[in-house]
Length: 416
Image (cartoon, rainbow, N blue to C red):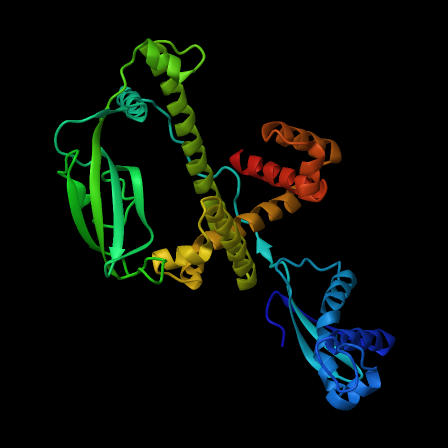
């Protein structure tokens, strides 16, 4: 029995098409077996079948034809609005053929409520002198110079150290370094290490005894007691940058050559940042209001698909930082299901927003032509400093750009 917003489709592969699939399956499976009297992969089909039977070819043949059946199903039902990745399985497998079942998630019925003239106010933006002063102070810290400090190291100071890590008296891989600059309080070492160096001075030698965290990704070290022999070579403290000619030269910002012009630039930067934040907040509230006025039963499969996309994007972001998703789970002592559960509310919101905008496009008869799409492509290529043809290839044609333009027009209608 079909559930709401779903449709079951069956596709059969039989006759000559199925016979050809069995032949391909035989050639593939024959390569894996050894039959007395024949070189591997060279046994005739009748000999193979006598030993292994036709049943050994049915599932391999069905797997070979699955994609063809999927494409056939899509081609025969172009009229359906499929909104999630179809689920497919085998419901019947015999010597005479195979039957696949595909479960399609169809676009749900949507009843738009009010999506214009929503009671949402855009916040007023104001940049205060305190905010400018704080930004200037942060910039001075950013360009601070490290100078040799006489006396004991404090949190925020940098120590230059040699260290050797041992476990049960033996050095362990990655546990030693020379001339390593470590800012105390940066939390770049395992918990406890930096805190135990507070108070050291240049020339000191210290034994630091620690235990690696239980969630540490290295299986051989997690939860283990270790010892670090630390030699302190230098202690450095930060000297806040002075707003002099050298500072502005190092800054390299055109037209910024004194404190007044720098403050004016910082004010402009803060203004832009706050306007972007305000715009995002405004749009979030507009979408929330329009979604609240909309009636729709969002299919679970749409949300699951969105979670998978979010998970893939998150994994790519971690990889850019040199972290594999599997290592992230070890470091945070979590599982993939925990992350998916955390992403669920945001995924639902994204699907609801997409359905809202698509429905507005339909109701308002919003269109985007090739000229508009070409213009958007040029703008994007210029912004990202990339070749138009490469960008077009990445998008797979102009249709995704036309879709993007229709969505933007729907957003403009909501904003009023």
